[in-house]
Image 1 (tube, rainbow, N blue to C red):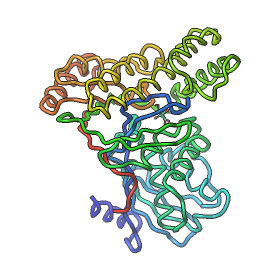
Image 2: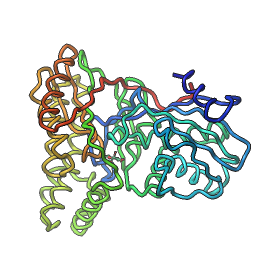
Image 3: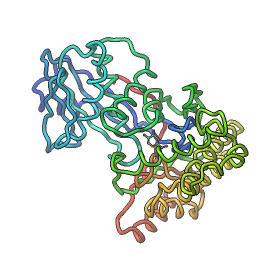
Image 4: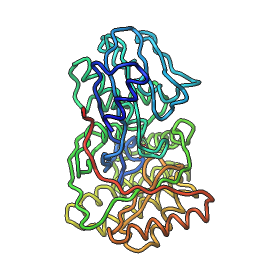
Length: 388
Ligand code: GLA
């Protein structure tokens, strides 16, 4: 991989002098969906697939960015002191541009241009956070090339701000945190209200994590993501007239049931219900895993999907077809949509000896119902960003 990236860099930028190779992972969330902007808990892990970069300082004021995933677009040029959102041609370059722009907001950390070639092996718009991966990667590349101090948690926070302020998606902290803080063979149990976190070893005892990509493309910006977020905020504001809480994540299910009538809107009540119950499911799921009770963990994953389908309404026919067929397949411990939803991927825990049959049966049923194929990935849990 390294050789291939370097030779591509040489072809695009002419020479590999001072060029260094970096990687940042993608992520999959095991449980705790749409809880991170509601002050709840999440349980994601970094993957061994992700985004690679070859980069160097170039001694100019201009940055030159090139993506092997969008070869036909060629090089994106921009001046470090004049960074503007690109509405037209270089959609992908907005992620690194957002990062560099924020890094230089208060003091100039990126003091000269960079040449950077990127290549991602996460399917785009799949819900495995190809965008957060590129954001954290760019931040990491700049930190290493310009040798400034910044913790990995601060890199995650800056990357989230880039997504919120530069890209315009009001995402929570989960993706950027999972990527910046990833640890091989561990999921991250994160309290998004405090950023307290704990690593939890994932011992699935003869089972594998299988991701199914629906191939229904989704862009967070044009999805109903921001709408869900404001529905939850509005439900919270109503509850706060009765109860002194900071976020929906502060409520137990019993407390929610007691106070929910104050919301006064059927749809918003269901949105808030999901946020509260999903947070509690996440706490229960992590406790189950600590007791080596993978069966209970799987059942909670299934319940998470039902809630995302019926109360939060972020699944759709593609994700439901994948998950509902996964539930029927032999050796499946649990299956649910993962990420923002509206297309993208599902995550399933499948007994090792059943993985091939699982891919075949779910793949066939999906193709028959939806009319195009899904892609399957048996994934491993990897580390956070690194220089290779
Ligand atoms: C996207 C966002 C995350 C999170 C998930 C849903 O991936 O970027 O912050 O809200 O959706 O759990």
